[in-house]
Structures are given as C-alpha cells and as structure tokens.
Length: 142
Figure 1 (tube, one colour):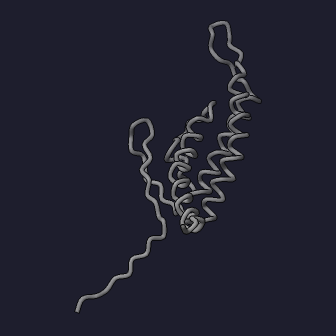
Figure 2 (cartoon, rainbow, N blue to C red):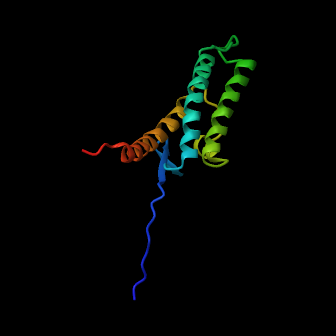
Figure 3 (cartoon, one colour):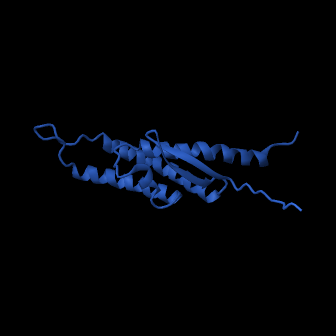
C-alpha cells in the first residue's frame, strides 16, 4: 500500500541575493504572510523619506585639509550612520538579526541605493504573488 501525501503551498519563497556579483545568501520569506507584506509596505514608505534624508546628507561636501584629504565631518557623518542603522534594523526586522550584516558588511553607505535595491527587489517578488491572490478573488464570472 502506498502512502498518500498532502502537498501544501504556503507561499514560501527562497530568493538568492547577489551582492557585487557574488551569491551572498538566500532570503526566505512567505509572500502570503500578510504581516510580512504589511511590514515590507511600511518599510517601503518610510524608506522613501529616509532615502531623501540620506541623499540630502550625501550632497553635503565635507571639509578637506590643505592636501585635499577629508577631515571629520562630525554631525553629518553621525546622521548618515544613524540612517544606515535604521535601514539595517528594518531589514533585520523583516528577516532575522544579522541579515543586513551578511548583505552589506561593515560599510556605511552615503547613498540609500543598496537598501532601495533590496526593497524594490522584494517588491518585484511579493507584488505579482499578491496580485495573483487578489485577482483570484476579485475576477468577475462571465
């Protein structure tokens, strides 16, 4: 007698992430998990504001000494670090502590582009999956 198996598709996605051409890790998330999708949406809208702040700070040109070497630019640097930390905490909150470290290392980015690339990449996976689910229940019968 053969054993029967019930297959359940919960929506688990395993997405390899490549950083600078190197396969760094595989992100796992469930595109059907409304809490995940809700957190991702919240991060996306907050991130747009943080990205604007970071871009404005990036436009601030630090002082240089007589040799053209950048000198400490204190408050601006602290603000850039704070925004980087915000992005990292949000990304870790979506997945698990330490993911942002594995993805981005110890770098402090003056541009939000690396974080935005990740968030937009997640949307490219979650968006179509969510749309299919919505259409399943909103299609009109002819």
